[in-house]
Length: 368
Image (cartoon, rainbow, N blue to C red; front, top):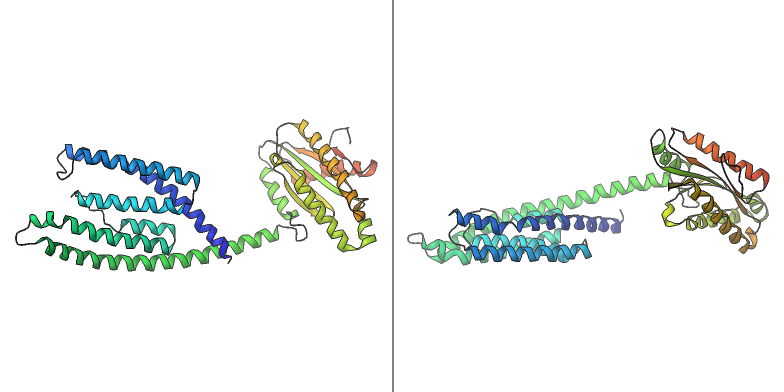
């Protein structure tokens, strides 16, 4: 599998996780007011309402900074660690405030597993252990004071030992999980890429890199028997192409096809959003799916004709090549691909028979 593709997957996943944790941060802004409510209801005693306001302001500031950062850089590493460390700090804050919410310190490393990166998990786990031991040491005097014959250090040592055993079990389990998850994702993503690559290759013209007939018919099927907006269907035929093959050989003929495919791709405007394919031989098709009015197609074909007429004479071997175009509209009346193709082909036939080097729209008498 392409390592760069998998790295891109991890980057995209990091961006999605940053958005998710940003939402969590905004929810956590409510923690301060909720704790303040608990104080008023006499649920919590070791924390003041002022501390709740400070907690709310700090969390709000972090949420705003995090929002700005992911707006600038959706997959920001800084944003990732800001959110994870903020969650860890909140757990520590609750512990130091003696709030009876038994939220394990290890919840943050568990959340970090969603980033699918062992490095992120290891860093978060290390920070988790350090702050867990630090917080336990800080609250040891308070906890020991309510117990007869228990010193602060004795309580700390007992709890720190228990937490360390819990940490080892949790970390080892999480590490095995992230390693298994990474291998699984790598394999699954690789298999998916292979399948997609094979599907694309089966729908791509090997010479020009454009879509092929198979893809075009599959793409067009979404419009059959369905209501949709106005669509233009254009067939392009390279006049005098056979003479290039006969005179200069098939390698020059292939070069002419590649040259025209590139020209065709670059000649449309971005807003045309064209789907372009090599249908076979020297015949190409373009579908314009976002036409607003029928009147737009004529000027579009005029512009293309002008581009083609000035391009080919620049190459001595291609100077006799011109392009004929036949077009029609797909209006959403349940017409099949064959029906639409035949209409555009009929318009193309009239251009080839009469003048070449121009265009015609099916059902319209004007020809250019």
